[in-house]
Image (cartoon, rainbow, N blue to C red):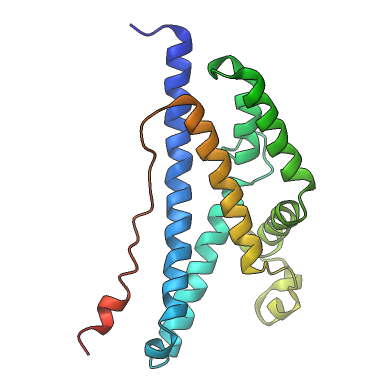
Length: 193
């Protein structure tokens, strides 16, 4: 029978695994996007298909990031995970080191130029474009939207997310965490030309 601390650690590791599921999906989406970019020459023969797939990929990875950085206090988000770990610092073997790292992550969320900008932009787009039909950006007016994130902002936020999750996982477990599944197999479609 597990004691309370072991049970809480087990539950936190299960929650981390759920975050890793989202991270893996996110990284797989971005890998598909990069694979499409590498296959531009072949995909030029299907420009409409390519555009639809690229837009769907963009919507999907933006939505995953929006969920991971939602501003709700009740949502399962990276900022809320950090707060939860701080409240349960007794689960971590190196409490003072972990607390310092968690403080560093909170500071980065608020003050890092790329991370804070990306999160603010995600929330703005969520509220005006993705979750609601804001008349300012509806239909043809979508061209008024200037809040697009550059790919480096997205990659920076994904890297930060992975850093947070990897650190927390490494402090609580010794087994291997989930890894990406996509294996750049788009090129397989073109082998049968």
